[in-house]
Image: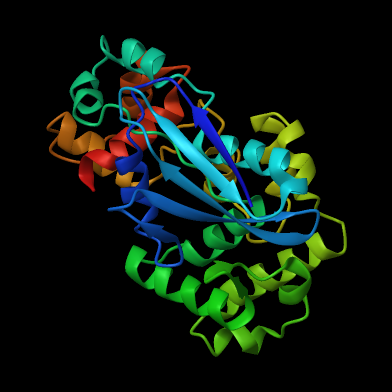
Length: 288
């Protein structure tokens, strides 16, 4: 068993991070104890890493622990990436103080961007959540993971691409997947398991390169790529204008009679660069 204390710059509100993570019923966390258990696959083996907040929003500190000493450094790097501890939320707040959404940032100060635990997990969630309300999307995801995934220390791991690649479409339709959604999940998993789509190499691509590469895959459109870039890779300057939640948040904040047009959204967002991803996160928070 190993433990490590990690500090980062404030403000960093871990309670807000846990609040957002708690919306996914597959996450293992305890808000009162400020603990979340992270399922990590390292060198093709599953490990559970525990993250516990022991500091404050102003002076954030975390206790990271795991059972296997040999994966300690890789685990720490992964946790740092997931919780974006190397990104300064203080500089972010300074930037947005003079923008047209300054009020939203004041209300949600210290809210971090927390990434999905791995890219395959992120991609599968994108497929399942496409064109579904959030509640049923979580239900469908839970069925998928509990049927074909596995548990370590009571923490759920998504099924491996190789496992999903061997499924028949009817296996997913039995869980209430649509035929098309079943095809996207299984066919893309086959591409990954066969080495034709290498998720580990995506982080080396620019946003535009990733968009061009992935939209060639059946079932992956611009919304999915933007979700991967933002929630999977933590790219800082993404603004998914087609997202209904963003449109509703802007309509509410700017007191518009109807949802903003694409051109209006471009005008509003000029002030937010190069942190469009954080503007997106805080706009989502403003209507949750």
